[in-house]
Image (cartoon, rainbow, N blue to C red; front, side, top):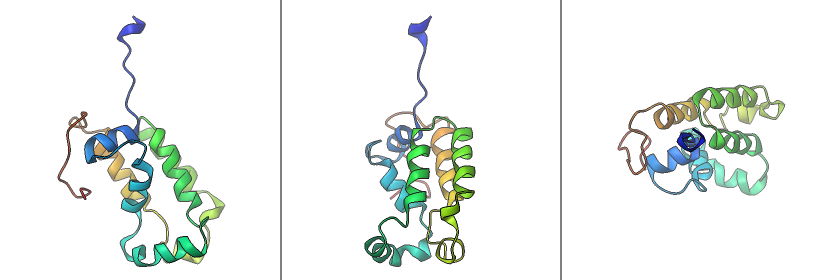
Length: 128
């Protein structure tokens, strides 16, 4: 019966299948899709001045990319929210961070949808 076992695709694989690209590039694409829009003009400068500023966000995306279920992603989001590195005015009030709601919404679209089959692309809100 071991031959009948079928591995669930990771979030990165489902994301790449649904939106195009490769699963290896999913984390980077998710980073840009999950940032708060009003912070976008400042992100390149912040990345230049303090390259480690988005380390908690990148860690969350790295772990979420490997997840195969919404429950796993929810657990990673909860850990992210309690990370002490998320304290500070820029992260909490100016929203210079990723949106965990947006990440969860994208994950739900990729993992819970019956049409998250390989090769199928969406033309929804997150299509770029």
